[in-house]
Image (cartoon, rainbow, N blue to C red; front, side, top):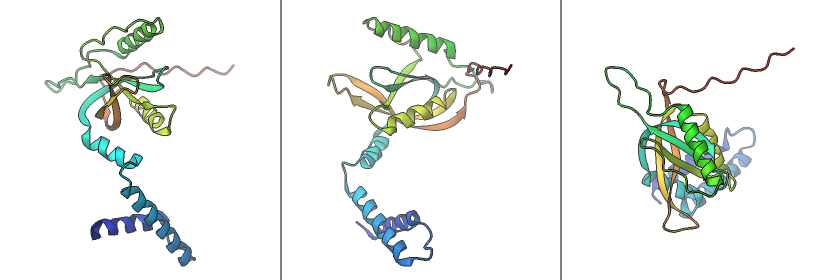
Length: 200
C-alpha cells in the first residue's frame, strides 16, 4: 500500500470520527478503529464493496428513459422498463415510442401469461426490461427499486451488468447496478396522481 493510499485512509478515518471534542484519547481511539475497518475492507477483495467497484467498472453504460417499475413477484426483483431517448430534431423533444399506459399494458399482459404458465410474448422493439437485485435478501436491491420508482419519467445513465441465472447457467439476466439521474423527460407523460378524498 503506497503512502498516498495510507494518507487517504487516515483522512477518511478522521472525517468519520468527527470533531475531536473534549476527549482527545477517545477521538484517537475512534480514528484508529476507523483506520482498521477501512483497511480491512479495502484488503478484502471478496467484500461486497470490492465487488461493487468491479461491477461499475465493467458495466455497460447507456442513456434511457425509465418508463415503468414493477415488482416481479416470483424473484422479488424490480422490473425496470426502459426506452431509448429519441433523437431531438429542430429543438423539439419527441415522446418515446410507447406511452406509460402502453408500457403498463404490456407488463400486465406478460404477468398474466406467466401466471397462466405460458411463455410471455417478446417485448416490442424499442422497449427493454432490466432487473434490480433481489429485494428480499438485502437492502441494496430494495433501495435501488425505490430510487428507480421515484425516477419514472426521467432520463438516466444506466449501468448494466449481465449475471448468470442461479437456476440455469445458460440464462443471462440483465441487472441494473447504478442509475444516474439526468433529469425529467417532459415528453413522457405520466398519469396524474389520484386526488385526495375531500373530507365531509
